[in-house]
Image 1 (cartoon, each protein chain N blue to C red):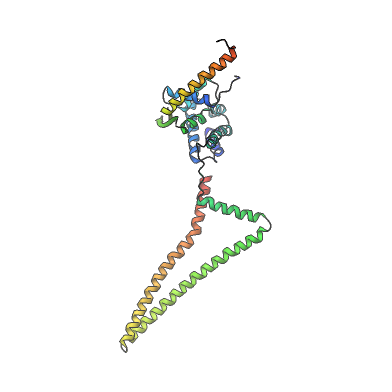
Image 2: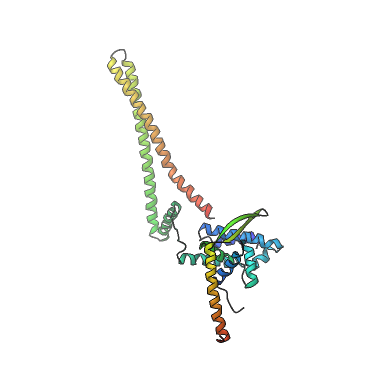
Length: 104
Length: 202
């Protein structure tokens, strides 16, 4: 693919997945991979950044005798997601209009 | 490479980060291996997907660095006693590294030796003084008892002085012994602490 996904978009995708419900690292990676080509090691720094900015929080749940860390979106995270969505729509529209040659 | 080797290598690559960051990251990848391995993939296959510990660590480090640079994370460097001692060692090694440093090192060793000997002598002389006081006390006590028949005032003074000096010697001895123990323990504590530091670092 010619286009690289960068950190703002990664934040938006991860927050959008968390907005649909709490889940854990491996599953978030798998869900992201259905939409964008993503290395398995890309997500951890994204989750860590979201967590450090209080956009998501974590809790641990035992699963098959080990630990599974769940990520959960916060109110600040939802607000940030709404903001990112807005920005993405206007960005997408401006790129679309450029690529399609000012049809509107 | 097994997943254990991967985690160990990752931890090593991250060792300059705060302990919390290292624990979080290694926990995440341990969990990731457990989740991803449940479909029967081998460690080798999983590591091929994830990438080398070096490249994984590079991503984690750059995320941490950007947090520090944006000021979200304050670098908290609190020098501990161990750090200070290792700084002293570096200075000593630096001194030894230059030719002129060798005579200086000999001087330093001689000074440390002289201080040690002096302390030892002071302690010995203090003990000797206490033994002297005790001996004087015993002598006064004995003299006092002998004088009971002939001169009772002399006897009272002798016995009183003897008891007083004896008590002084015993108390002084106890105090001095506690002090000496503490003095001896200081270098032992320093050695233990640097040993613990080395163990926790490895």
